[in-house]
Length: 298
Length: 95
Length: 190
Image 1 (spheres, rainbow over the protein chains, first blue to last red):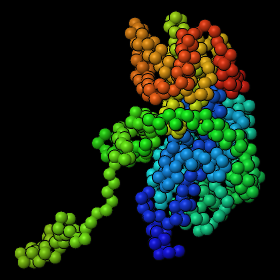
Image 2: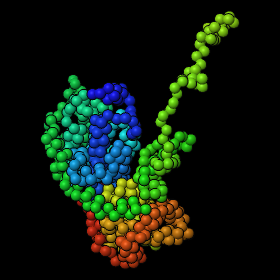
Image 3: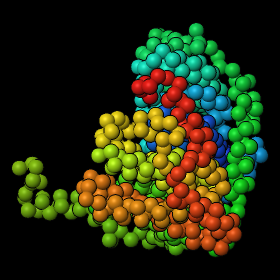
Image 4: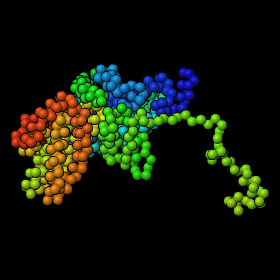
C-alpha cells in the first residue's frame, strides 16, 4: 500500500470523514460505490414485495401507512443513487446493471410475500435488521453517505412501529390472524438470519477496515437477536430454530448456523422471486422510457 | 439537472444542506424538493438551487500565519503576570 | 342528513378509488423523484376520502372503514373515470388533469355550502388540492405536444361525468381491495 493510501486508511480508522471532491484511494472508491449501489438496489427492489399489499390493505389507516412506507423506500433509493452518481456512476447505468443481474441486492427482497402476515413481519423484523445495519453506517467514513443515512434512519423509525402495530393487532385478534403471523415468521426466519451476511471477522472485512461500516456482520446479527427475539417470544410466537438461545455466560446468542450457500445462491440472482421482480422493473422502465425522453428534450 | 436542497428545521436555525434531486426544470424541482424534504412537515423552509449555480471554494491561503486578527495571536499570560508583579497586586482569585 | 351523506359518499368514493389507482404507481413510476411526489398525491386522495367517510359515517351511524370497504361494488357512487386501471403514464396524467379540473369546480361549490361542516372540510381539502393542481398543470404543459397524451385526454374526457353504471374494473378492484378484510368475520380488527 503506498504512502498516501496508508495515510488515508489511518485517517478514516481514526474517525476521519471524506467528501465527494476529496482524493480517494482507488480501492476505497470502488468498494464504497459498489456497497452503496447495492444498498440503493435493495431499497428499490424492497418496494416490490410490499407494493402488492398496498392494494389489499384492510383498513384506510393501514393503506396510508403502507403506501407511506413504500414511498419512503423509493425516496431512500433516490437519495442513495444520487450519492452513487456523485461518485461517478449515473443512475441509468445503475438501473441497467440491476436489471441485467450484473449488480446485486439484499437476500430478503428475493422472497415472496404470501399473506398480510408477511407485511407485518417485514415491517417489524426485516426493517429492524436493516436499521441495525443502517445505524452502523451513520459513522461511515464517506460523509455524503453518512449524511443521507441520518434521514433514512429517521424515516425507518416509523416503519418499525407500523410493523409492530400490525403484528400486535393480529396477535390480539382471531386464531387465524395469529396463525398468519406465525406462518410468516416461520418462512422469514431463515432469510432474516442470513441478512447480516456471513460471519467474517471485522478485521478481514474490507467494509469495516475502510470504516465504511462501523460494525462486523456477526455483531449486527447479535444485536438483532438481542433486540428482537425477546419481542417475538413475549407474544407467544415461536422461532423455527430449536437451537436458538442466549448463552448466559458469554451473553451471546447461539443458533443453528444459517445456510450460507442459500444466501450466495439467492443474492447471485436465483431467489424464488428474483426473475419476476427484475422483469417487472425492466417492463416498467421500458414502458416509461418515453417519459424520460420528453423531460430531457426541453 | 441536479438541484441542491437546503432545509431549515426550525425558524431561526441555519439552512443546512439536505441532499440533491434531479429535475427537468424549476417547477419540477420545487415539486420534488417539497416531497423529498417536506412531506412530513419536517422542514420549516427549503432553499432549492441548481447545482451549477453554486460556487465551490475550498482553497484558503495563509502562508504567513496572519494571527494578528485571531484570538491565538494574543497570548497575554506572561505580560499580565509581569504587570501584576509591578503593581504589587495578585490575580483576582488569589486575593 | 341522508342527503348530505349521499353527496359525501360520491366525493369520498371518487377520492378513494382514484387514490387506490394512483397508489399503484408507488415503486414503478417513470422515475424516482416523481414516484415519491405522485405517491403523496395518492395518499392525500385516500386521506381526503377518509375525512369525507368519517363525516358521512357520523350521519349514517357507521365507521369510515366500513363505508370504504364493506359495501358491495354496486353501492359505490364514484365516477367511471376513476375506476379504470391505467398502467400507462400518459393516461394516468390525463386522468389526473381531468379529475383535478372537475374536482376544483366541485370543491368551489361546496365551499359556499350553508352546511358549515361540509364547507369547512371542502376548504381544507381544497387547500391540499392546490399542490395536486400544480402538479397536474406541470405535467400537462410538458406533455401537451405528445400525441398519446392528447389521445388519452380525448379517451377519458367523456367519463368524467359518468356515474351511472360500474365498469367491471371496479368489481375487480373491489375484490382485490377487500380480499384480506373479507378473510375474517366482519368487525375483525386489522
